[in-house]
Length: 108
Image (cartoon, rainbow, N blue to C red):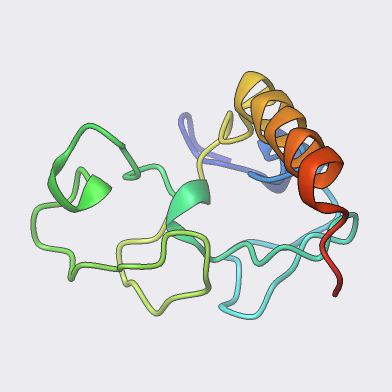
């Protein structure tokens, strides 16, 4: 292993924070988190994802991906350690709970 190389042991699901240590890299387009079934080859798990940048991507040559939480074919994709945002996940859960208390739980 070379310095700076990402290994699956360093990765967490961008949505739920579960370890992705059992997965092999590179991640395929259809890979999912075993814990929450969220897709993993998504902008939100990519090292180039940045909300503050145009197209929310640091890679200027990448084609725009509109749905950042859906699987994509981006050739620039490289998984990012630290993609899970615990504070953001907690805020999302609180907002969902507030909506459920007003309108009832979402029926799936």
